[in-house]
Amino acid sequence: MTQTRRQFLTTGAALASAASLGLAHKAHAADPLGVTLVAPSPLGDVGWTHSLVAGLEKAKAELGSPINITVLDSIGDGPDADRIFQKTVSDGNKVLIAGSFGYQNAALQLARRFPDVSVIHASGYQTAPNLANFAAKNFEGTYLLGMAAASLTKSKKIGSVSAFAIPELITSINAFALGARAIDPEVEVSVVWVNSWFDPAKEQSAAKALIAQGVDVIFSNAQDTPSVVAACEEAGVYVGNLNSSMKAYAATKYLGVADTDWSPYFKAEIEAHLSGTFKGAGHWLGMKDGVVRLLDLSPDVPADAKAKIDEAEAGMTAGTFNPFTGPIKNAAGQEVVAAGAVMPDEQVLAMDYHVEGVVTPLPK
Image 1: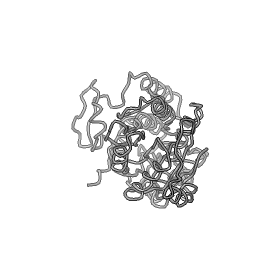
Image 2: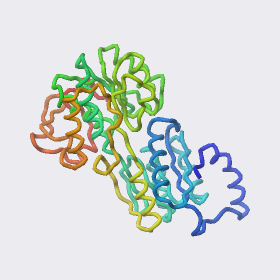
Image 3: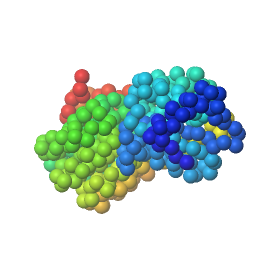
Image 4: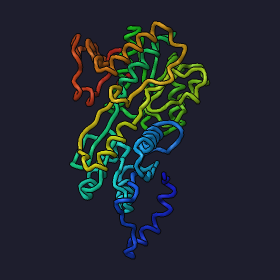
């Protein structure tokens, strides 16, 4: 059974009333495990929330254990998240997936108050005995998208419509640029920041602005709508994206997707909860873990570029290649990684500058 946000909120008053009368449901060993996913954007057929739900449903199918899933989408940071986290635990749910960086404080406080609940937080850095965090090495997939983009651009101008100027998305753009310049060192990357995870009109306007500048391949970086993809298809511009496939919105110009499959991670964490072995730790997962994948690569990518993409992907899957291997310079031309060296993980996670080839300054 999967319960939606609408069902959850509709039954809330009745459950609160039952609790006040001492009639609230109490979990028994034979009861299904209650797992709640709380996400910041609407649940649709694409995007971040979609990828989380798809991973959770797949994990449930593979586990074979009785599990009830509640999906609560479009939940803002702050009091709303606090209230909903509290309610889902009061309803007897024992695993909470907090699907936004902005939920971090609420997730930490909930974990401290309910030590028997396992809390999994997206993109955070805080941990507790029963609070873990998870993030994807999206840069592995975007490096490959950059290689594909460079093989198809005619103007040598590629670009990105990006949500927020945070390290995770800056890293994705930098890897996109490094992958592109591994194919063609003359390629330049322009960026438009929309400062939103979900703003179809603004995203579409940003894509059109890049196209007006001569950009002929665009990377939609963490948009939860297909607005950028659809706009590029209409304009005849190649387009790729993050998280889940949007190929249905670009029948002829889809570049590919740096896809995330969260099912291996969610399955492992739910198993750990069931066995009593859950640990509060950080999980940064990529191709080697079966979480990051390149899917739906355009058949227009030339064979020689496709061979290089396959080689790089195989190296990342085997753990023998890292996109942030030097020499790497920043946008000011200063060396940040020496030839043959690999950027340390902590520097990748905290990245706050663009690499050489990205021509748009970061917002202040």
